[in-house]
Image (cartoon, rainbow, N blue to C red):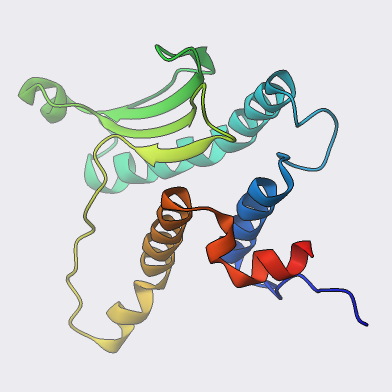
Amino acid sequence: MTAPQAPDTAGLPHIEALTRHFSDLRDGTHGDAGDTVSRLGKEGHFHRAVALLDPYARQVLEEFDRTLFGGTGEVEASGVRRTQDTGLGASWTLSWPEQRTSGIAPVTLLAHFGRGFHHPHLRGATVHDWPLNVFTPEQAAAEVPTLRAIATGDLHNLVFQRDYRIVPAIVRAGN
C-alpha cells in the first residue's frame, strides 16, 4: 500500500500556508524546528515570525502611504509585547494627518498569539469587507489575491468552528 501523500500545493502559497496550519493542528505541533510543542517554544517561534514579517508589513503600509497619503503617513511597529490575555501580540500601524485629525484608528496589521491559542494568527483592526469594483476582465483577474485571502480566512475560520478533520487532504496526509 502506498503511503498517503500531502496535497500538491506547488505555486499556491495561500494553500501551502493553510496546509502547514492545519497539519500543526492535526499533529499537535507548531512548525518543524526545535521546541515548538511547548508554549515557550511556540512563543519563541512567534518572536521569529514577527521579525520575518516586519519588513513586509512595513512595505505594505509604506505602499499605502506613498500612493494614497502622499508620503505624509507614519509607519510604526510595536515589536512583540505581552497582551491583556497574557498572550503575545505585535502590530504595525500607518497613521496620517487626516486620520489623526478625525480621531479614528490607523490602518493596522496585527500578529497575535492568545494564551489559549494553539498557534498565532494575523488580522487587521477592522477588516471584514473588501471593496468590489470590477468592471473589466483584467480587473476581475487582479482580484485573485483578494479572493484567495478571503477563501483562506474563511476556511481557517470553518476549521476553527470544528477542527482540521473537515479538510480531507490534511486527514489523508496524516494517516
